[in-house]
Length: 313
Image: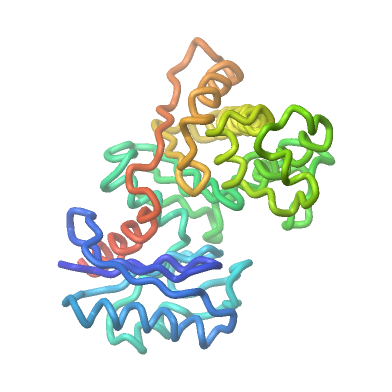
């Protein structure tokens, strides 16, 4: 059975045909439109393109937003136009196929649990670290959604009272200190204090707005001291947050995914060490295995397609 997984993000709509072994055998992508009708047109376009080359049985949509527990409607998506929208039913009618809807981090967690870095784990947590932090938690292989379908919203754990402002309206959220956005903000702050220490990022002093997480990662690989220090700060906050999360959920494995995880060699070991030091009962309890994604940027696509297949079965 072949199914299609569609990762509906704020920048692009990416779709893949996925087989029962979790392999993406074909792929299509379009830019994400800003209007609701146009977005659903875009999803229909990528699915139609792939169906023109493959016989598929179902479609799974992974969405960066709050999804109702019945997986039929999107309640709210900060970077997408849907508001209390019955997306699954509308797209099923349009495509003539069963459609399953899921939060993108939940879908990614399922992909890693079935085929990747969390395979077989009883309690598995995925952290998607990119512009912010998304999270998916699996208990006994099943997605934990909370009472209203929005759990676990870990990126907005408040780790620094009165800290950096967050788009959610609060201050000091974890993702303001541990994300691609946070990495860039930290580097800009460090540049302002010690511009002479930088060898690569110093040229951006005239326009700090051009400093991005990806640019800081490039500078760190070039050995830039400020960029390396920014990654050390990210590692510290990642370790702090992982300790909090482990105290609450006691996971067997934590998978780091998302764009920032692509730079894991620059911070993962230091984050693991910090987590192991500050965890409650450190030295007297088992540690979660902290691993990086094995499925890369296809994680949510594979997970969404797998959920569609499991639901149809």
